[in-house]
Image (cartoon, rainbow, N blue to C red):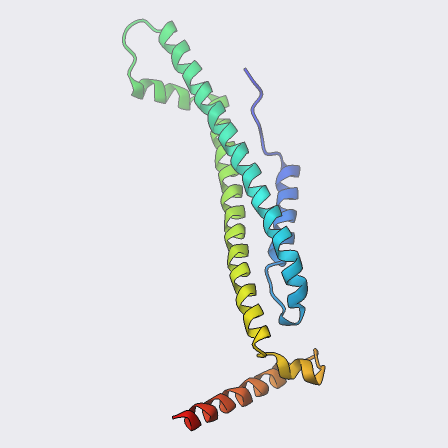
Length: 177
């Protein structure tokens, strides 16, 4: 019987550290948009590649499970006299330690794949947000910050500037009406 792929603790810990690294890259800082624009395609590619590898591992494990089940069913039918139902075969294979171990590995692999696919979707949303932030940057939304040369805005200063800009927009809308 071929050896089964297993997810040992080192692989799981390494995967968790890698996941946390990419998860930390999700946050967008408006003062570093140019850096985010440069890094995003590569980060998205690396996460997509990780998903592809996990999908391949899952598919391989599913193939090995099916092959094991097929051989088990054939062997059981050959060694049994009389008719054997599918329910009996299913019950017998569920008692096989090797089959149960492969099922456990499959569940763990599916969990990791789902986690990485969720991260990939988050980076896809990040891409859309970067696109929108780029548009408002080009439209001059952050222009008073650039003109004054202040990148160290406090939350209070930022809020005051947003209120002032909002009031300017309201005044402009009233004049147009």
